[in-house]
Length: 123
Image (cartoon, rainbow, N blue to C red; front, top):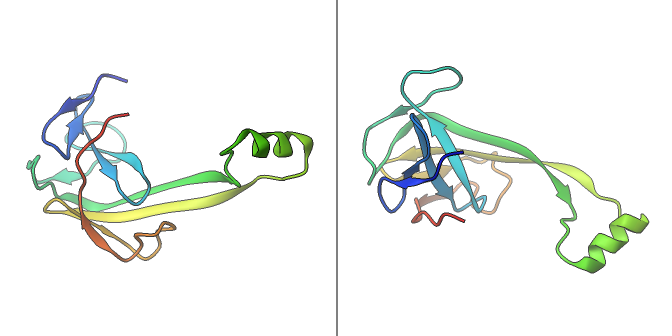
């Protein structure tokens, strides 16, 4: 992937047609593609300071539980003492005027809440 280029404190781009924002619910960046091209595309109001994307943004993934947070857990998983299982995760939101409205089907703590998009902090 290309390097991120800041468009504003809350929005960056990495390639033609890509827009990225930090998701405070997931603690990870989300990408939307806009303009011409293949694959899913979102409409963007053109504002880097108060972006609006339509339609909603749905991100789904499997996350292994329990997560490997320590060497002790890693060893217990390796020995079979702890069994990890994949858990379906969902982040579903609307981004409107620089605010992110999390829908009730989100599996994180911000489900049902609306918050400002946070400043981008590239890892």
